[in-house]
Length: 250
Ligand code: PEP
Image (cartoon, rainbow, N blue to C red; front, top):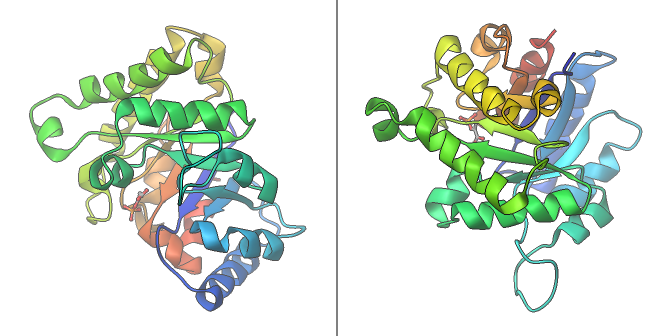
């Protein structure tokens, strides 16, 4: 019922040349395969050239971040209207690197989420616990608080036309993946949380797993009932790995 979705987060990597080569590899590797919806999130500066290269392809493009303000005197920021203008479809908000390294608060994340929704683009809201929180049995409470912060700011119905990515911080870029059972437990918790407000929204919501997803572990994660795809970091920088992950959703 839910179409699988795989999003590659290229983070602050690449050059014009390497990104063009990576994209050619992804396009060729995916071929006519239907199944997962696929999107890539390049650094802001490469978004226009990626969109140009993807003309006529089914792959969509997203941004890794967005300003919490609409427009105005915010030097260095990029608004959602600009992202929409150039053809982005998705915007990642609340990635743990933004929360931890750039001190983004739950409220700022919620404001970004609202900007994206209001523009008619799809927010990919990242939630996840750190290692200490998991080890002390706080994982579900942390995730609920992150979801609740968005719900409080954005209001009822806000998860309609949104994507949630569960990304345990201890699994991001570390090579440690949550077991399929650990991930499924959280994904079901997220879906149940949203179902308290609207069962139909919860049933439709694509909940992605992120954290050291690679070709070798993707299929067992995707086999879980509430895992609808992946947000992929490191492995998205290899066309072969990324394409294998996309195809593992079938
Ligand atoms: C990410 O940063 O969103 C991510 C999941 O990274 P990695 O796949 O490298 O763990």
